[in-house]
Image (cartoon, rainbow, N blue to C red):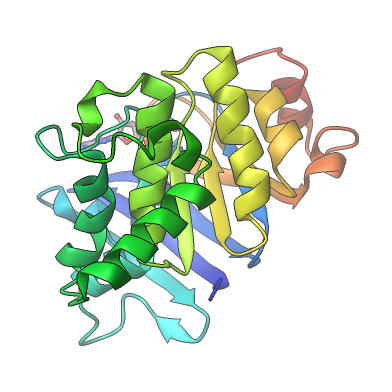
Length: 259
Ligand SMILES: Nc1ncnc2c1ncn2[C@@H]1O[C@H](COP(=O)(O)OP(=O)(O)O)[C@@H](O)[C@H]1O
Ligand SMILES: [Mg+2]
């Protein structure tokens, strides 16, 4: 189920603006890969190219290749909607469907995918997804209440439950804890460590301690200067990046000298 991602020589544009240049990396299944780097270096932009959300911005495009296992995600005839189904995404601000119940929020992922299930099957998937997102115990007695009534941390776990209900091959998370308090942050970090046994997880974080705590591999993005494209400076085992990085800029960044 968990899929490998392989990126080859990816350039990412907004119209004529080259936002990110020349990224190549392999993201291993059943692991957490963290992407770090100063604001504006293209971490979010890069993440959104992995499930073809980037091109939703008018004029936005890429050059280069992204493979999920052996499938060329930008190949001819590939339906971007189907790519987005298989590669789920969780955002900085939890975004449950506000008028829907907790139950319907989780079921929505399956319904949007055109899945037809008997009520009892759907009940099972909803429960399993909420359990996997470590939310079941807190919501099992109020599944028909609005998702918007939950705390921020619970809403974020609801969004994770919605994303994993469809059993995606890869789960992308863009600063999923940056709007949360420390206790909710800890709950999401614990959850990532549990989910990585079944999923491929890529997380963007501006919190280096978080990257060090949750990830197996860390990629450092940087900008050479204002108006220059972002680039992947180095990617390696997280312990290596945070102890003996190969690049001076990585060392300066992780020791807090800039960014
Ligand atoms: N929708 C957009 N249209 C045009 N430029 C954008 C858009 N989103 C981001 N950018 C630009 O792309 C670059 C990378 O931004 P972003 O991916 O948000 O960086 P990060 O997530 O690392 O802070 C920045 O120069 C930013 O201004
Ligand atoms: Mg960002």
